[in-house]
Amino acid sequence: MRDEFRADLQIVSQLLVDMAEGVRGALRQATTALLTADRAAAETVVAGDAEIDSLYRDVEERVCDLLARQAPVASDLRAMITALHVAADLERMGDLADHVAKTALRRHPSPAVPAELRPVFRDMATIADRMAEEIASLLAKPDATLAAQLDSDDDAMDDLHRSLFGVLLGDDWPYGVETAIDATLLGRFYERFADHAVNVGEHVIYLITGESAA
Image (cartoon, rainbow, N blue to C red; front, side, top):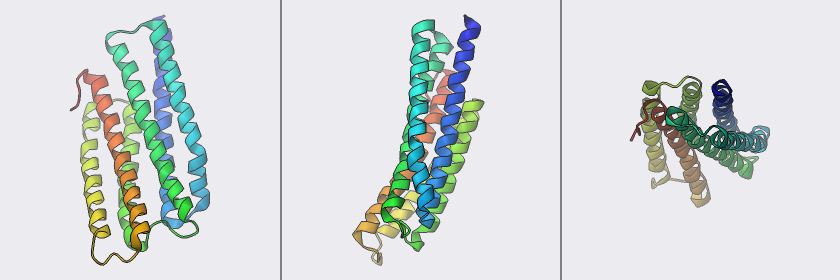
């Protein structure tokens, strides 16, 4: 019975890694669509969001089944709780990539952001990609020290988010209200993607230590 539980738990862990890799790829493609008006890339992200949602449901169903059949306690119960929280954050990260892609589609065939803002979004995407890579590694091999380091990436993302607002609120902004609103929302999507990555790191710390990272 114990071996069966560990095998089932390993399947859940692999599903979480698959989700993390999926949302990383989704945001990469969404960023390409955003910066280059690549319609095919955007459509791939939108279509692929259903697969991330399916993985999320699979995690939920497997965890609920394990809870019902095995009645885990102590560290095993902690692993189940962590899996549910992590899956929810990853699903939301997938939604945020989907939002970026849909913004690109709405603006197609023009790029969704003006040339002056592309370096900021490129930098935000680089940080988000690194954080997604880190959480995929954490889920494959939990490490509390690496998980805590996600905060520094999140700080860098917040700095870029603030710099974006500095441009949007400047007196010489020439692109009008609609473009400013799009840029504001896009900045929020990347910033929230990073926040959810930090949440995953905090869940991993809880899994390892049994204590909240807050």
